[in-house]
Length: 417
Image (cartoon, rainbow, N blue to C red; front, side, top):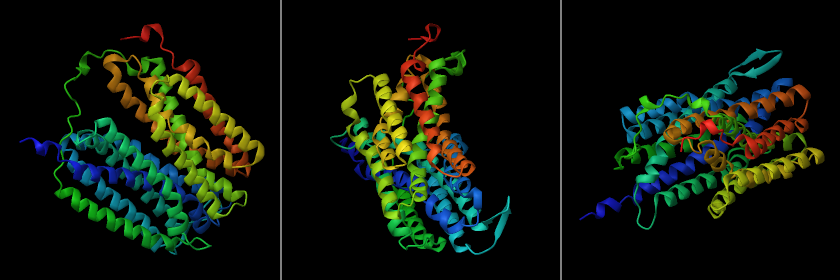
């Protein structure tokens, strides 16, 4: 009589599909930097890299802007309602980006002697709304993956399947941008219109399906609730957590900087579109491979995982700078694939009743995905090239090595459990 309890295969497939869409659109939006720099920022002069990397900046600023709002929606209108609302916001973001293509010849705005098309600023707004939508979706997708019961799977298995589909989406996204959206030799903004319209249609259909779907209600709190009024210490009094937030900030920043800016770097060196699209796909493909096989490292201490991967990443960045060869940056994807889990585990270690608050504090670090790639773009304009800007990435890797060696250690007065 309890067969219905395990009849969640349909909802599970929808959640997995949404994870694919989240990963796919995240990297698609990053990959718009290079073609839109050529199509819209040809008269931007010394600001061309600063402005191009604003696309990624605007996208990732949607996460801190809407993350807490999404949590409140989940409490007030429910998880399914929040999911549907997130899909509507996603359609809005894609629509604004499509609008930028439609009005691509409507005039320019002068900034420091550079002529910037109005369409570019419309696209930036769309990028921000798109990032906000994905922040909303990710707030509710992961809990759904955990509670949608599918025969023969566990919660961890379902989460891993969702994560794998997310990584598959990030891997094929560069090819989608290079060959489907901007298939011609000279990128034009109008080429955005048809692919984005199709994506809007797909998300619209998916929204209709989700509205009619019966979804189990995630029990986020479980049975282990904590009386937050009894938590008398500031979460920032835990030094290893505080340094861990910085670790997440630089990790996410570097992950996005390499994934999004490697194309601008390769283009500046004269590589053609096919090659830098392949570089980016291999970078995100390395993330996929690492996450698929990361479970085999469960017996290796998080500190050792982080130390090894950050050291190899630093070595690859130095070799790339010394040889002016962006191909060495591709290998960083494999190294970065397991860093999130390692940093997270070290940062919340022995927080006891403060674990939930510590986990929330770590989400602040996601803002690194907005700030560090953009800062690198600003540096590229200031020094007239991308080659030396990878020092920023190297410094971030050095910090992660420091956190693995020393920063993660728990001070005696911070040990609660």
